[in-house]
Image 1 (cartoon, one colour):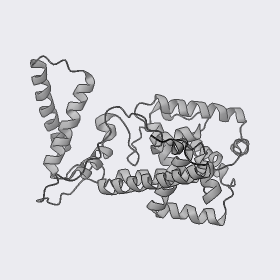
Image 2 (cartoon, helix red, strand yellow; image 1 turned 90 degrees about the horizontal axis):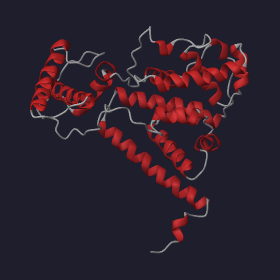
Image 3 (cartoon, one colour; image 1 turned 120 degrees about the vertical axis):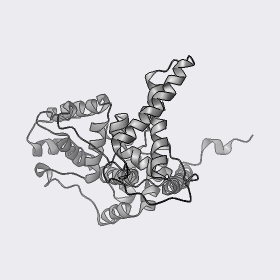
Image 4 (cartoon, rainbow, N blue to C red; image 1 turned 180 degrees about the vertical axis):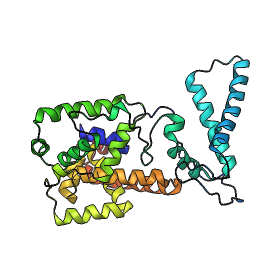
Length: 316
């Protein structure tokens, strides 16, 4: 369950996020006469205009287009209307801020809940009255995440339950209800907040004395993937290649680099959050290409260890 959940959080097992995922556009159309704009640190709107005026301008352009479409006989559904607003929001933001596409995407991430109803990692906004975040058997999402961290680090779940002061049957219910809420929450607040807690490597007093064993080499490698993006991308590529060759990638990372699943996924969430907050299309492309290169190299290694690919002996 953990690996599937973590995969959906970090992109290893991508699922369609409605229709609002920002395109990783380049900066080729970035104007040379760019002038520095001051942005609100929370909304990333330019401080030289009112947010209400921005929303009104987007609505005026979008509704005019919608009216023309309907006049011409087009039957627009809700998804069509959302897309029209999405496109005009991009158009107005780019015009009013004279900005490049990276800044526009950072803006979309910061306002994803307001404009699309979907949370983005690194910009979580939480409603205190959200029923999906109500504790289960007195266990909050933060508590549950802390338990998941300990268990995915290799600590027996019964030891974790004992430290929490309840029977293992409670864990089974927690591990059913919280993932169920993640699936039901269309705003992705629960899933995104779980990922944020995971990136923070949260702990709670009840679990502080439970320590996963980690070697000196593992500690050194863990510190390295936290600070060296290329090293992280290499191991991420190696893990994916391992899975494709029928090898447990998480276990392979543990055996060869001493990094357990919990720590690896925590770092993965840290890098994803940092990427969302400081979106840079050139860096994203570079790291993606590097991971793909390393994945191919490790795939060749695993293929050689398994006696080569079946297709290697086929001549056409």
